[in-house]
Image 1 (cartoon, rainbow, N blue to C red):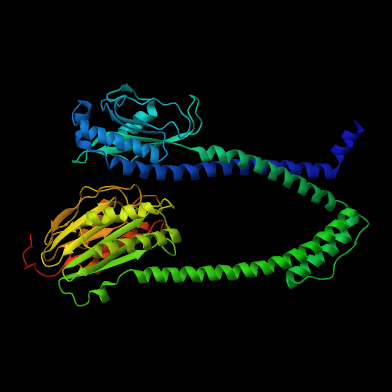
Image 2 (image 1 turned 135 degrees about the vertical axis):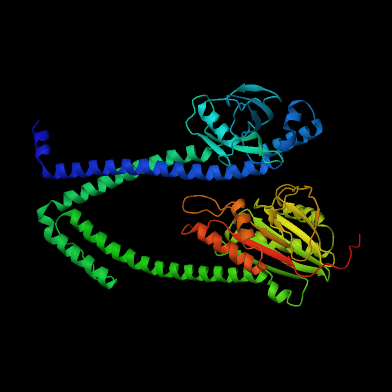
Length: 548
């Protein structure tokens, strides 16, 4: 009892106890905030990546034939689509990919059209639904999300299940609309993806947090006990004076040595001596690291210059051509980027146009970009249609793609004498076409899969005729996906509206007008993706008839 009363009346015990309590409370708050921050960051990343997966998969589903699938028609097309979805389910490492048609009367029931299962991803035990399988909507949350997608209030919806009680593993489900050719939502594509990293990360984070909290509590408690001992005031002043001197001079002084009969103060003095030695070494290391960062920065600057120099300049390349005018620009999100454009003549009458976007950013994407650009350029010089060129390049990229990156490409070949443009797309954004005295419109056509994704993919040639005053605008997804401070995207509709506001300008004027509008929209928000644009205008009437 006397010991307890003595401890309660001890200033050291009370101060140290209070400090320990505050540190533990602070650590708990930091742990909660850190946990929420990590969860939010992972959820945002998973939602973004999974929505892009869903967008890609949805592009391979024919929204006009869903009712016929349910009636048992179009069996060959249905089988091909089902096989492709199963391949996506395996290659994308997701648990489920399924397509459902929801009863729009109250969104309380749906029927299954496609259902692909990959239980190997997380050792789950899902059973595939058959075509026509009906069931009730899971809950009110899903019912509201179904309604929002069908009424096109949102581009897609996301459901997170981090804490499951039905035997399932933590996962994310992205709900994405599948539309018919008229733009109406006919069904909802659902992709369920396991979330392993979150559960694997939380345990070590919790253990580290607890260790750090107790370490800080013990350290500060010891420092407070030393500080409360009046007999060490003078030695502490000596230590303090040495520390002040070192902070001013940044040079190691005479060792403090034995400054007190108390062991703890001797250790403190020794720590100061060690600190001066380590700080001196740290300053030397910091100087070396700073020099290394400057060297890396210089190399990145050179890499950016090399990348920029590898892109053609229409002013110098086509200064003597009167049939057309072309201008392009690329603004990377980092020092170097993964977007690229190209234009070159394979002969005096055929102009090749390229717009592409690599799946990553920075130096890896820039290297992948350079290789792909060279493959496209070399293969185009050999002749062939855009679809043939893309097929060749895709197989070559897949054969050496250890980094598992991919690139979307739009490739066109303009026969200058006739104005006939033959083009093909490997999963790239649809271009915008302007016919003289008209307006810009999105030019939609059947696409092939991205380059570097799967070998042996098929690509499709399409043909349009361009005449005097016609303009073609190519771009990467960094344009419609540019996001402002309110997290709103620039969007395709706003892009077309901007193009039509500048349609009477030259290609250079159009690109400047679009860039200004994007900058005004984005405001102070940082650029998160490369932004690349190209515009070509036919300047003279086509007089020579087509050779076909």
